[in-house]
Length: 79
Image (cartoon, rainbow, N blue to C red; front, top):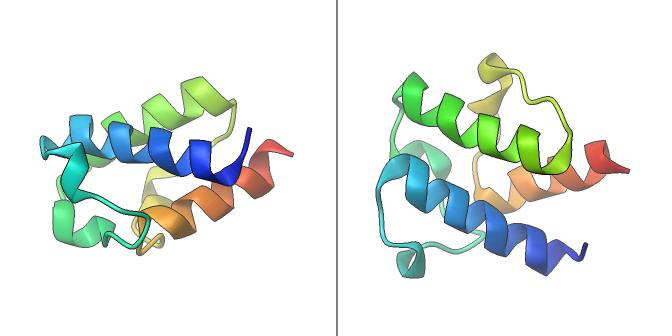
């Protein structure tokens, strides 16, 4: 899996979880600006964990400012 493919998938997960148009999102999109609902964050985390077999503690999810930083974390954890 390339980083570009991962970012594209994370954008789709973010669009579904935060109910926004995926075409408006990039790897520089600030996740905190999309929403702070814990339910939305759990939904996105669960999708990522199921797809990439990584664990993202909910408390840590807020530490990832952007989709790109989240992608970097998933890439490291999936190795």
